[in-house]
Picture: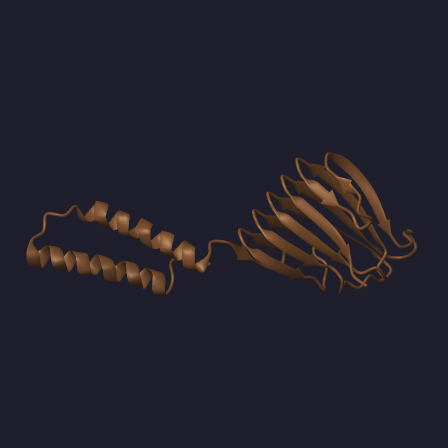
Length: 174
C-alpha cells in the first residue's frame, strides 16, 4: 500500500492549495487547520474504499483476500483479518524435514496439500476451528494428523497449524 505516494498526495496538495487561494482572494474566515484535517480524513476514507487497506507478501495476507503459492518453504505463513489460501501443493521434499507454521487469526484460511508429499499436521485451535482432510475438526485443543508414511529416514513436511478466532481448512489435491 502506497498511502503517501502518487495520486493520493497530489489530490491532498491540490485541495489545500485551492482552499488557500480561495481564502486569500475572497478573504473567507475559514479555520484552515480544521478544514485540512477534515479533508485529509475524507480523502483517506475514499482511498481505503477504492484502493483497499490490506497487503500481501510471500508470507502474509492481512486485511484482504489472497493466495500464497509456495515453491520454496519458508518458516511461517499468516492470514490475519483476511481470507486466504496457502498453496503447498508444489512443495518438493527431499531427504529432510521441512517445518512450517500456518496461522489464521480472525480469518478464514485454506491450506492445499499434495497427497504424494508425506505430511505431519500438528493442529491447535483456540476459539476457532481447524478442519483436517478427513473431515475431523479441532475446535479447542490440539490434534495430530498424518498424510503418507512419516519416518525420520525420509523427508516430510511438518506443519504446525493454529486457528485463533478463525477457520483453517486443509485440502488434499488429487
